[in-house]
Length: 336
Length: 262
Ligand SMILES: Nc1ncnc2c1ncn2[C@@H]1O[C@H](COP(=O)(O)OP(=O)(O)OP(=O)(O)O)[C@@H](O)[C@H]1O
Ligand SMILES: [Mg+2]
Image (spheres, rainbow over the protein chains, first blue to last red):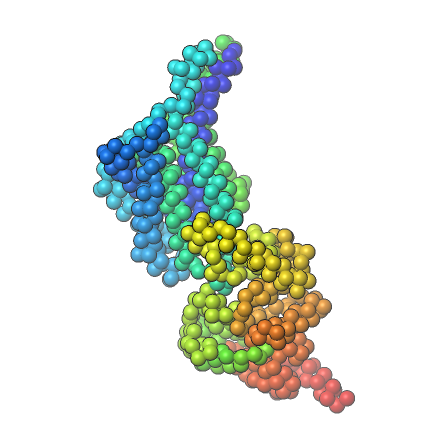
């Protein structure tokens, strides 16, 4: 039995990856949940908004790198982030003017808006691929590790190495800052309060003189910001591939729904719940088990509950289970 | 002065408002009464921009305001309350009131970050104003309560309080008194009179309580089946045969007669 090694292996393969993945999901789900709360529909184009925004960040990153601008030990992409957000926000606002506003005026049913957002999704999907291609792109530079596996082994004398990549650290740190800023914004500022008011009771908000078009615009800008940040962090952590962002839509929606659509806190809780279960179910526990269990009980196989091919099934399963017991999600969102 | 000309609001084939024309004189407290389903709330909703009229016009001080969205009307000084009280349920009572005076400094993304000092001052003034309003309505002890937790009657008071947060020109009250106990009803009545006298609010009041209407309102407009049935002083309305037939019933007339004879 070797608990220290077991804990290190657990941190290395489960806790750290799941935390950074959870942070990415949470940021994505926050965007989905805000749009749902204010505009009252599930925005299927959110995954492709993330892809488009990240593509923009990559282009700006390349431009910076080509003229020799770097961000010290941090990825250059962080410098490019504000530009990516600005471009994406502009695109999303233009989409709203050109597409969604028409349906809002018609007071279209949410279901229609969902289908409309699918149309937008396909267009964004194509635009992103047209601009940056379908291949896999790595765009992280700067320092690679906060804790390096080999150095960790040397320093501690443990058999297990602990690797903490800088992109993971960055993801977690950025997520904390962004979430803190968002909650401050929603709870303390006038604009944030009008957003909450509008989400809470649209009729009353209108009759209190709150301008719905402004609330909607601010919501889109914030959702675009969240999408680009989430997409860029995910791309830095793994790699950028347009199709992966499309696939991310499922766990992101699962996070938002499990947490309770329309509830920002729920989106965060949902993100981490989905991430930890997904990683927990698809991780081969053999290593950890071998350290902890007596030799006689050590598993022969990989002790993996599900192949990674099925990771999206985990999101679905959690979704179904939570909705069975709490139809409005963990944090009492609006009924779906 | 609000002039409503030949207003129609149809839901499918159903004529909820069927060619109503009314006038609300500046400075008056005009009553609007009529049986359930007469179209009173629908008329309010059309005037306040919640519904587009099927036909007809709404004119405020000479300006055609037909079909303007509610937030624009708000900025023109036209406010209304809901028959079924609305509130921002997750906010406190004070925050609910502070939401009202829209168009404040903090409302652009830019100012949120760059004019913090001025915003803070503005917010402090608003909080003070909200507390004064709560005082006036005798519910200061509820200031920090979540609005969703209020009782039905307290929510009605909050509805009225909302209209006191800004300098309104005309306020449409949809049964603010319903579900409110007698003493509170008198408080509300006094509040309406004071706002009318001291701050020059014009009121249009829907109410089923004829004592309340009689005490406050002149003139009184009677609606039935989407049309205006009669208009006049509260006394003349209570004597009006058609109104008695459609709405008040014989009991009241007999009472009025008895009072007149006594
Ligand atoms: N959105 C709607 N869709 C269909 N019918 C409606 C709608 N709103 C109101 N109505 C109908 O219009 C009629 C008038 O309703 P309204 O609420 O204006 O009555 P009211 O005079 O305010 O009655 P009360 O005194 O009971 O409040 C009713 O028969 C109602 O069913
Ligand atoms: Mg009514």
